[in-house]
Length: 209
DNA sequence: CGTCCGATACACT
DNA sequence: GTGTATCGGACGC
Image 1: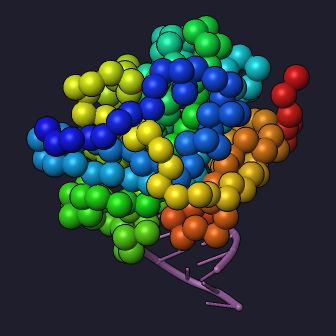
Image 2: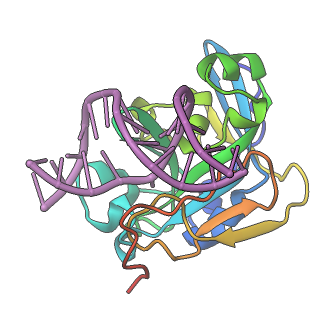
């Protein structure tokens, strides 16, 4: 296992999800396995605000969403559309049940391994474009749900310190079918790895009570 | 570039 | 039984 660098602390993730989400942009996620390491610089994330947020899996407390009711800094990976995995980081105080969905990034280390995990990608900028692609490039699946990003030895880290200063843009979330108009998607404006905006089907009632 | 649509299996009602 | 926090290929401009 190679040197992963200093990691973000539990205190970083334990803040409000709307503070944590934009603060993650420009930071580097590193995943190290027996196959090697892949690092991704985050360019797009979305905030999901637990029981207040109809679009969040934690809107109701179920077996699947239980992880989000636990401590911040743990990983939540869910399965969607019968074939894709998507990765979140749990945020907020215990019991607040909020999380940040990792939506897109730029592969900055481990390009060959990243390409092998996503053979369909045409350009390197497409490798981690979209949440399922980003998750695949990092080699994460449901088995990784519960991983604590804030302790050594897990092979998964968000490095402390921004790569460079970053300008954050904000807009509605992608693909959600409820609360579609809440501007809780954060991204680096104009970055080639940011996924295209698609409104969810059935997107009628927006808003949070 | 854009829009349309099928694949696919799981959690939840 | 129903809906899905997606992707990529097909097609039109």
